[in-house]
Amino acid sequence: MGIFNAINISATGLSAERLRMDVISKNIANANTTRTANGGPYRRQVVTFATSDNKTPFSKFLNDATKKNVKLKGVEVTGIIDDKTPLKQVYDPGHPDANEEGYVLMPNVDTITEMTNMITATRAYEANVTAMNTIKSMAMKALEIGR
Image (tube, rainbow, N blue to C red; front, side):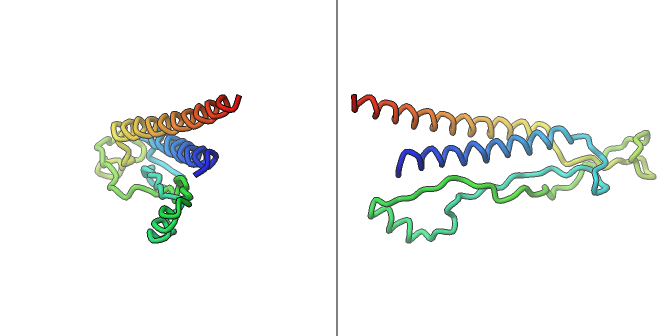
């Protein structure tokens, strides 16, 4: 595995975690949105990840590892899906979107869960930055050896 491959792996992690933080921010921003373009309340969105090399069979990895020809890849975003958990029903007869009984359908966004996910995404982002800085430091030290 070359040094640029390691940097590319960290770069895929950085861009994936940045997108995850964007989606979490969107969820928090729409935590009280009762009207969307689709007509109902906002539904929480979730980012799904997969390894970039998930289509490669394990036997190929094993053969490559024995030949010391391992080509690792990073992570990729496979999609942004709507969370199918039920919407919250809140009694608020004065709300303009309340039904005849006075209940309003609210988004299925829990801000505590979103903040926890945001902290996790931030930590993963920081870990990728640290890995990239370590790779850069190793490359600089290798260049100093040649002097």
